[in-house]
Image 1 (cartoon, one colour):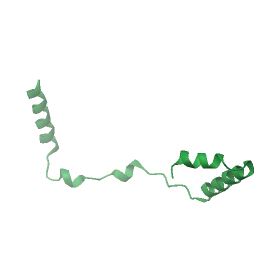
Image 2: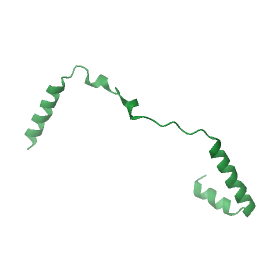
Image 3: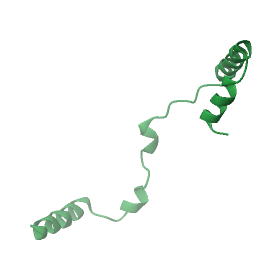
Image 4: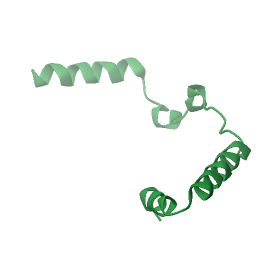
Length: 71
């Protein structure tokens, strides 16, 4: 069921039932532990195997040569 469908269902409830539903939802959200924040540093070293055996300066020179050819 989609959120807006749930809202339409909730509108059919009596006011005290709507308040109870809100309370239950708030209690449910408050009881869930927050997701831990992620750090950009977790990506450090990701994909390093792609660059093994590649000379950085040679790679840059090739890119520059391609760029000059496209002009």
